[in-house]
Image (tube, rainbow, N blue to C red):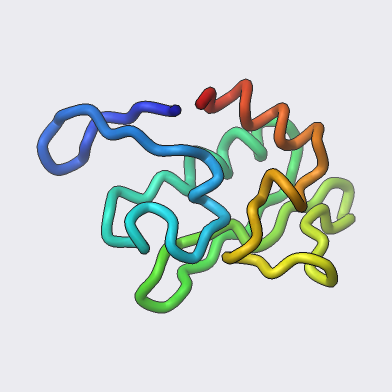
Length: 102
């Protein structure tokens, strides 16, 4: 599980990369949002990433592209609700597991 320093108290903040794809991740958007760390890991690996706020909920990754091709299968997954380990290609899951170990 990735560990960050809490922006509010300076203590230890535990989170998981999957929350960057979940509507209710990061305490439904009320906790410290680390979506940008996940996006940075993907961008560093050569992917184009889009992030959007979901109203009063979490800020999530809505698009991952490589060479202009969308990686998130929007036609077969329900973004924000489905487990990203189930709909993301295994090479991306492996990349995120290595960059942000659980």
